[in-house]
Image 1 (cartoon, rainbow, N blue to C red):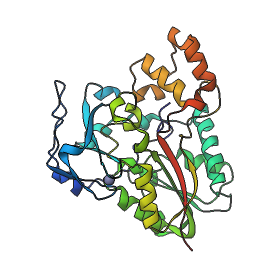
Image 2 (cartoon, helix red, strand yellow; image 1 turned 120 degrees about the vertical axis):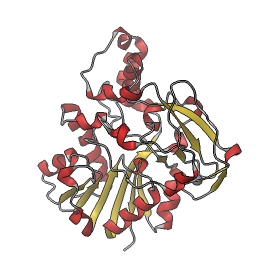
Image 3 (cartoon, rainbow, N blue to C red; image 1 turned 30 degrees about the vertical axis):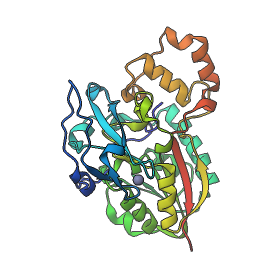
Length: 327
Ligand SMILES: [Zn+2]
């Protein structure tokens, strides 16, 4: 169960080239081998640290989209804030073509995920009379889900979705700005968090869901391939970096979850079970959008244990953080 699997389309990303990445050599992924070298210095897009190339931790991460399964990409870690960064510029339009999320539909499991997500947002302060902007809403499945449940002031924005690319919604201010699985896709995460600050009205909430680099072990890059999701995730902030940026904006942390909303208590609908299922097949994200075809290895005692108790063993590699902007 990939964390992004309820998103309807490619989450928003900034089309402009990232000036930070200009310092990097542009590499074409190779099927035969990788140059894992770094430029002499690199700047962390999260904390701004200038990082010594010889000192940074790095790993080759396999792509988790079936079309590009044979490709790997170098990811490096800022030694100061522990955020993770994709090393190379790639042609993102090429990789987003036929992106698996484009085929997401409102299935029963999507509604289950959204019920979990909505429970969380209610604990973060969401009420039916509040205005909420779902920033990076894809084709708006969650916008529709909330609207159908009498949340009548829900707006969505996604620069890459024709139905939600009207920038007029960005001229308003909201009681809650919500953004799930978007921050890690953009070229400049600090700029996006600043934008959320502008979109929230004084005293409003900003709720951000994103992977947590602090709990992604690069020595186990294959295990974390779905959180790393290369080359789509350009920068994955550590929880420390996210909290530092939030502090610099004057936001107060009000609530924190360290597992994704797709990790539900329902039997077999948890991250551990999904990871086990994915590994039993081709370990790609595409599986999340295809009919479930469990093999005999999903009936082992360990698989049954994960099915029943896997939610309690979910890797802590995701954040859902709710902040309050000052009055
Ligand atoms: Zn950093």
